[in-house]
Amino acid sequence: MTAERNEISQRIALLERASALFDRFGVSVPLAIAFLNHWPTEIKSYQDLVTTDAWKIFLSCALYELAAFALRRAVKFATADLAP
Image (tube, rainbow, N blue to C red; front, side, top):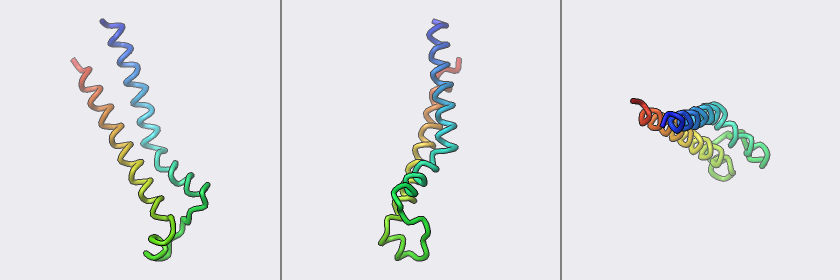
């Protein structure tokens, strides 16, 4: 029983570290994709935002932030479930 509990604790710790890294560097992924795809990163007006692909950057960043939040919550629930 304790060996199984230790293995689960190690997996949760690994998920927690991955979650922390994703939380810290997750937003840089959509920005890197934007630069590689030559999306416009400078927006001068609302018209530029709508007519170009710049809105994809904002949407991607928002989705990555939501994913980071979901990972943090998953780690919290997993660690609370293991608490005696």
